[in-house]
Length: 306
Image (cartoon, rainbow, N blue to C red; front, side, top):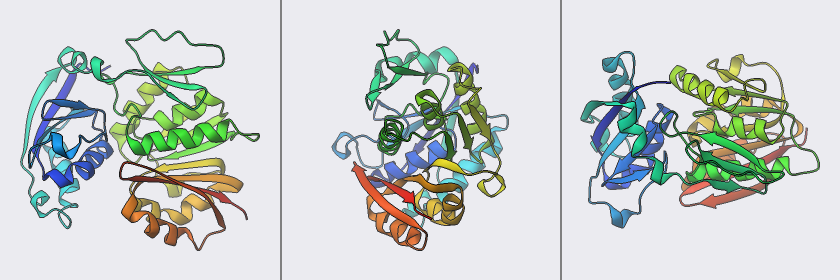
């Protein structure tokens, strides 16, 4: 468990908050505040609650090399400059926090919540009296990032809960871009025999591994930083809660890893990018089962038929 946290301050255009928070999440962000409002990773405040160009406070496990980490953040934000030119040269400010300073301010913002009929996501400081048949997954925002309340993660959780409640629940699952590991852990908690969770970010893998250990799911969930192309095997359920462009770039590999009659769940996709993703996957032997929306985000579910 870490006892050092990094608080990063950055000013972003009001309309760019959503994409910036998503980008920070991909870099291992543990949470974001804006206008003194605490947010779970990915959860963006209503526009009317923010002044123009709000200053975000983003929290990370303290990196081994602050300069290198800062360069990674600047590079990732600069990739959004084609949409928001103000991000071409972002100004970042930092301060170090002790564990108690970071964790204590967050407890009021993370109540337990239910996904489907079985799964409950619960912060570690609440003693949840699990009813018969309930599966409780424990997450602690003071120790890990991503508690599942963002629209894209919530849509994926609902989709996988539905699959596990079906007559043929998935036994082998692949979680691409696992981040905090929440989707992988949910699959294991709901009954998957094996979950392979990959993320090319080494720090994300380290934190996800800690979450898996905390929930005693290390016998079912394997975390790896190997790229998707290097991963062997085929899976009944493939999850990819990543950016639309990454879903398209990895489309062939995602479909290849899905068994015949298996499900492929894609999210991290803005609604205005939905059709681009559907068009990109049209060439593959897939049946479009559903598209669901929450806020500005889309989740697309396919079944492979060949």
